[in-house]
Amino acid sequence: MEYIAHLSKDKKFKKLIGQQKPHKLKKRKHIHIHLCGSIMSQQLSTKVAEVIHKRFLNLYDTATPTPAQILATPFEILRGIGLSNAKTNYVHNVARFAIEKGIDHKHLNKLSNEEVIEYLTQIKGVGRWTTEMLLMFTLGREDVFAIDDLGIQNAMIKLYKLDKSDKKKLKEDMLRISKKWSPYRTYACIHLWHWKDNSPEK
Image (cartoon, rainbow, N blue to C red; front, side):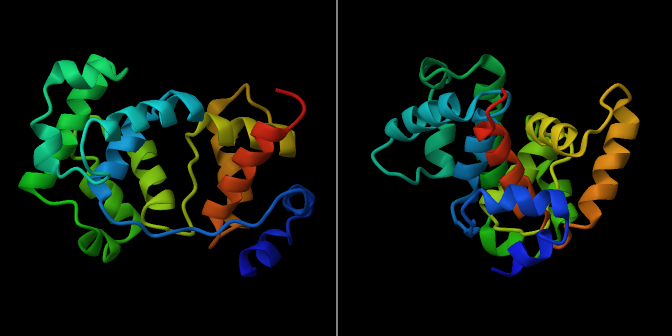
């Protein structure tokens, strides 16, 4: 795959990629559901987030509940699947925004990464990280770098022996290294996550 050849120019990354299977990004529809999923996964492990998201979809007799159906779901019901008060509000905020302003994949596909971030972070509870996850895993954008993600930071600190004592310098170093990965920074992030999760030292 083209991205593997490009990322393999980085010697440290070449070794990391050689231990993993290649990845293929998908473009998905029903953006509001995936955005709710991103909110649910904030500050949670992947396994816990998957359980909550499954409970969420099980509330409906369809795998693709409409924004109106989500907004009509009582607060207590959403709290009951394991969401905090804040996240329950945020899920309702997404549904309300989808009804009032629209979160259509055709519209978002025409926007640049930064324009998507600017548009969706108008929703209270949707920050930059949440939108970056959506860009990667729902809109299938190949060149997104989640610099604020703790998993990415920890993986890069370990792989490149970066100094983590100075947060500002750490981010500057991360950006400098990640420029070499462009235009495939999403794939780089995915491989870093997998490497971190599967590395012997946790």
